[in-house]
Picture 1 (cartoon, rainbow, N blue to C red):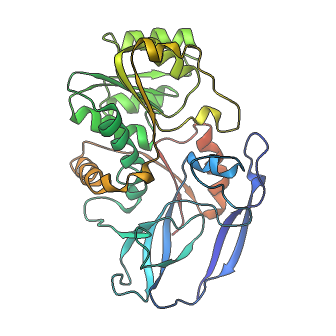
Picture 2 (cartoon, one colour; picture 1 turned 45 degrees about the vertical axis):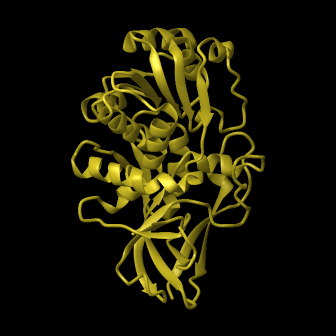
Length: 338
């Protein structure tokens, strides 16, 4: 059996995460039991939620245990199978973690899903046609519930979630405004993803400047907002929100290092009779087939053209992850493992 490189969480961050929180180890891959599958991972997904799991604090999911392989989505190929539904050569997506191989129990529902790479590249099943895409779909369709002609805004617009959100919202006839960091990302958001406008938060780095930029980009106000960041950007959106606006709260990356993110004027939620709802997409598995079908169609039809930033080799994962938290990636952050 092959040797398996893994990255485990060695110690918990104190404030900002560092490469020293992780440890690279190697172990033997165990022999398969009946019903098990050996998967060689081709790509590992890096996502902001992983930062919250590194803390030992109350959250919607259990903390990442010390000394165990870091959690993470993976796509790869079946290299050995003792399960009748999976054959050698099948392309699969699962939660294999930060390692080169995983042994999966094929009888556990939802652990491994076969995917078709005829029209959609394998790596996209970790982004546009995977968890990030479904996240965008749920927040837009089930929480924001947009009507044609409404204005919707998304922060981190050039990322895996934000790019899918834009394509889905345009397909529903919305005016779509993104917020991203830097002119290159904003140009991609408008020119390649088809957003109506994009605001560079690096040029609008406080509440007053962001509020003014949103007023110019959203002359009819904001009807729906997909939140990935928090902080002053959320405050600025609340100032520009229309009556009965809806906010889907997906992430608060500005606060992942532990600092609180107070709202400056929460009374606006009442004044505007707004709906503000947080969600975790893994709690809504019933919508995944419908969402994945639409997202796959958008990618295959060229209406969603996701970007990827790819780090090479498992050892590069920690630095790539830390860069993701600082917005250094362009589009979906992946690690190529094979």
